[in-house]
Length: 408
Image (cartoon, helix red, strand yellow):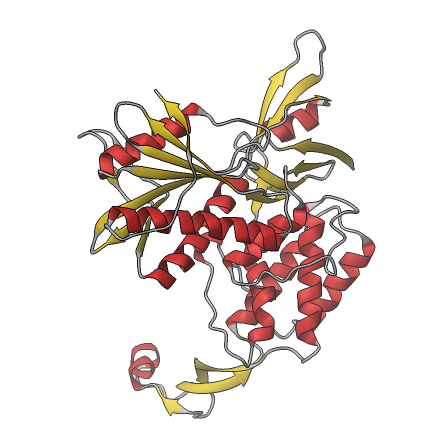
């Protein structure tokens, strides 16, 4: 199998056969292709913000992010409150393959849970039986069987391993076993896990209709595996022009992941300080122009602070369009200042918009730092937004970065 390694937002010149070209053209949302005119068979391939692994029978594409793979797993885990996936689960430094990383971590979490045996729980069930068990469901009995005495429609509580949690875990295991490009060791481990779940019903879960499971101290050890299973089942199936499944994509949109991470951190800080957070707050700039800022803090329903989170290439400067967009948010919401949060190493600064007095504060979060430092910088950005809210509501607040540049 040929492996093509790319980097997010970075165009790369590659030699492709016609079948390989057809594969890449089938995922226009993930990859942009431009022919290299002087050289037949050579294309310029440019990924966007989506990173991960695409696997077809004859081709594997690795789209690497600007940040470390372990930080991606930290952000994924943070959303579920499970920022515990470390080097013990996958040798991040040794190779970059999002699919293999998922399998390694999923295997580690499943083996950790199976030390205590497969999870079982009490669940209410309704089945037609030869004899009465539990209580008779008279309504279903009359509707389905009318005057027949057997079978008997019963409702009862059963203590079983055939529960939603295990059904999701089995479906995720089957999905990984169907993927190509895994080592023999990983496949053998997944087959062992599948055998442990063999008594669980095989259920197909649509990515848009994944079930929720309530976790308590009795099943808490299974929560990391369940969160990973949901991630696995949300992976895209790659299809050919006839609609037949020919491959699998395990990818993450870094734009969305970064924005959701910032949203979680800001929400936590807002709850602690008594503010209301409204993500994707709807506001009109004009009668026809509708905007949705990423983060808006409210006090009694009134906006008091606004922020926008942007994941950009780490070596880029400040795109003016983002500054203009934040200024539009401030004007539409009637706020004197706004916050722009970038995935960048840029130090905090405040830009003053000449002629309006509006302040646009910029805060960078260094995505290359270890998870603890990354989280600390995100919390600093959240605290800056809280400071904006306090200032807008007339409450005394601490010092802020000195005004640096004037935007005209």
